[in-house]
Length: 72
Image (tube, rainbow, N blue to C red; front, side):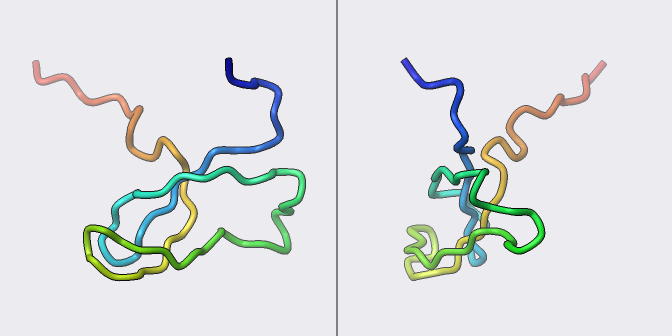
């Protein structure tokens, strides 16, 4: 069973080359202040572009749980 009372937040990493969210990781919210630190950036392999790219931090569920308009 997963821990619910955790200080870590799940984030997704989006490639600057292809725009795909390939990697997911967790960050500690207590160690990261909003003033001093910006978004997490890592250099990782992009399987879509087949080369190393810079990945930046985004929300995990970006664009997943949006309500779509009805057709009728």
